[in-house]
Amino acid sequence: MHTIIEPFKIKSVEPIYFTTPQQRQNILQKAFYNPFLIQAKDVMIDLLTDSGTSAMSSEQWAGIMRGDESYAGSESFFRFETAVQNITGMPYIIPTHQGRAAEKIIFSIMGGKGKYVISNTLFDTTRANIEFSGAEAIDLLCAEGKLPSVPAPFKGNLDIEALEQFIMAKGARRIPLVIVTITNNSGGGQPVSMANIRAVKSVCNKHHIPFFIDACRFAENCYFIKTREDGYANKSILEIARELFSCADGCTMSAKKDGLANIGGFLAMRDETLAMQSRNLLIITEGFPTYGGLAGRDLEAIAIGLNEVMEEPYLKYRIRSIEYIGEKLDTAGVPYIKPTGGHAVYLDASAFLPHISPDQYPGQALCGALYVAGGIRGVEIGSVMFGKYREDGSLIPAGMELVRLAIPRRVYTQSHIDYTTEVIINVFSQRENITGYKIIYETPYLRHFTARFESL
Ligand code: F0G
Image (tube, rainbow, N blue to C red; front, side):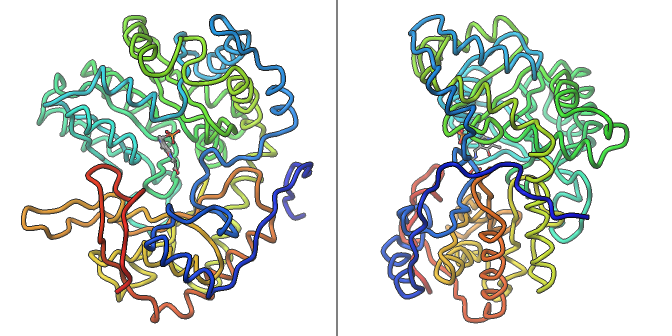
């Protein structure tokens, strides 16, 4: 078998600036040990996020020039609307400036005090928007999804039995919607199977609860369905996506992921009344319904990106390049969530740094160590992001302590990836020297973005 090569050539490049470990130690200290507070120019391999960091294609750049910036009825909007309708089969398409703006709109309408929004696992902004509306956010992930070292094909599945029980216990009237995140970003970028989507839909139908999909990484999820679920090997990604969305009443999307765009998002739905309510809020906060929070050129880039992302040579390369990192880490026994996800590798910081307790934030400490050792920027997905406090001020830790290394789409080459795995393995061989952190400043919502730490 041949090496699976990047299915693109590079036409435009950006410099990477090199720094020494000593320089990075100073930079990290000045940034209060929070990778979000480091300047991007001081990062060598930026795996903070796969969001908005994609390299656009020459077709997308051509679309940028074609963008129609008319306030109302822009041609770019209709091309965008057609692209989204073609994939989701949903009639009402509402553009927003990014995913969280779509979440803000939908949860302002459907959320509220005394309600519960159920998911496999909510991402941080989705959870924050639900909680901000007064509702409670409930994660019901399947059992295998909670076992980092045990591989399974669809570790993002929602626990159907737990869903039934929760609905019986709280009453369907208090559950305004169920939203399934594909792939499950907070739980290892793991996919959800078509069978699970169908099962969630059938429970929701029985109880008359609307079913939504958080579709940020829909194409990666569809590729996993194609390669791992019986009966899908001969279907195209578009056919699988259409089947998947046909189960849902609506979706939220951040086009900064599988839209292959640098900004953008949308809400899509089947219910006309809900669409009218959503557009009313859209006009107050985002913009007129034919542009939302976007320029016409952004709508063009998304319309093209949504089709490029479903091309199979691209998805094959994409999923394989992340699997490849896992295989390299296996040679040194580095612990990570198995199998590797669709957009990222999630290092298991609890197993990597067993000498650091959750209240000293092992994930954050590992992020710091990777940055100093190799200029690699990842993000903690653990007790900094999802931890809460008891009344006595002690930490209620997150379910897992992870470091996500998210791979931007079409940006890094195989040698960047080889370098990254060398740095991780090197840090692993000296892990006893890594110490924990203490929080010295934090905010009530989404504290990980701005929190400041002290090294212990
Ligand atoms: N839902 C999921 C599953 C996400 O991963 C994100 C963003 C959002 C919603 C919100 O979208 O950023 O466009 O407002 N995730 C990024 C990340 C930030 O790094 O994983 P947004």
